[in-house]
Picture 1 (cartoon, rainbow, N blue to C red):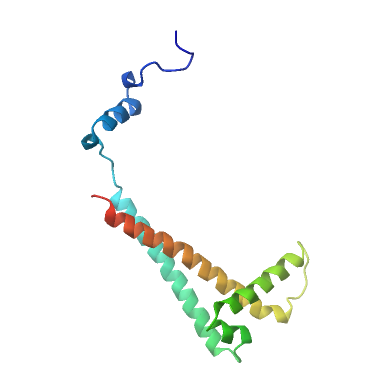
Picture 2: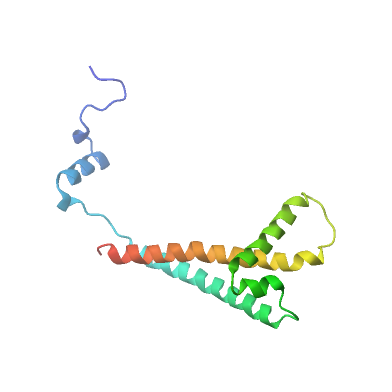
Length: 145
């Protein structure tokens, strides 16, 4: 006697259970759709987003060089990114420490750390999307058509 809700012989079911059993028995029968067009569309979307981020980063670089004076973090950051990350962390700590719903004037000493924070966020997004983009390209090349 079988348990309620339990199938005795999955080979006798129609649909996916039967097809998966058939494909498992003969690898030549295992044919899957590669979604090539959808993959290309995804790559184009990622590429477009990377173009936007690249332009944003270029604009930030240009604004930094045209400012009245280069801040010490920026000078150091051109050689060692950790100083920009430190300034960004300073801004993030300031944001957390000011509490919710507190209004008032934005302190001048936070202007540059805020700029560094925004730059770090752009870099993080570039890193994430660029990794996804490159992984997708490699996967697209290795998948059979």
